[in-house]
Picture 1 (spheres, rainbow, N blue to C red):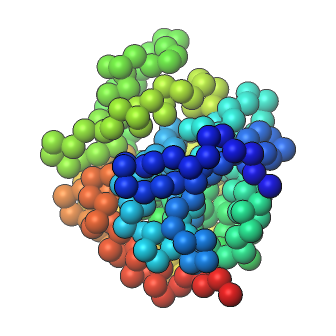
Picture 2: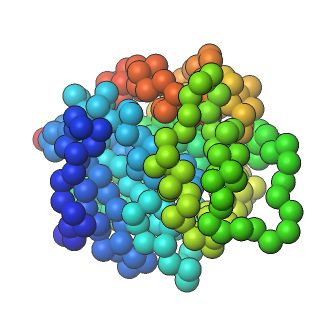
Length: 285
């Protein structure tokens, strides 16, 4: 069912991660798995221009009670980066569903960071049978919540970006004083193609233009947790209140943290997430 691309590898010197490449119709999808295989499944989806590695600090906090699954979306990380495939959000969600089937996962709590929360929502729309509950971390509810960058690049884009451009791009991803984005996450951007970078960004915009997430989530009726770094510099944190329109939604702001609380303060991010999954995770028989 899987094609190994190196087998188990040591993550942060503490956790042994099973890494595999799932052959799907559109190209290989890279998957990481940690924790007991008979524990409730917890799927973690990264945001735009990122990868499974963005969740590295969180994983050791989650494996005590979950089978933690991370997927590199097509065009990202160690997954394939074809120029002739669709990067539309529903198509990305369909691939995630196919990957879970290959792994034998029938139900999972799905967590998405930033645009990963958009894909998580689309997965719940496409495969409601797979998704037990949803947790969104700093996922803007609609385009009106987006904070436009102070300055936009002009002329033909340079690819791959220079180190200075990468650091500038990453600067709005965090807000905690003194925190520096790990070099390997900047490599994730550098290793994308210009096509996959722009196509995935435009796909998220298109999906949100069609219908705001709170409307989609209300129709789904899934348990929902929304976590939002209060000092987010990419999406207005006040927009988290829009999710309160979803019946039963839990919304929590994280003071002192920015767009990437999973990196800036993994423990503070994991605490409400684990409380949520304790209520909604489905155990394997």
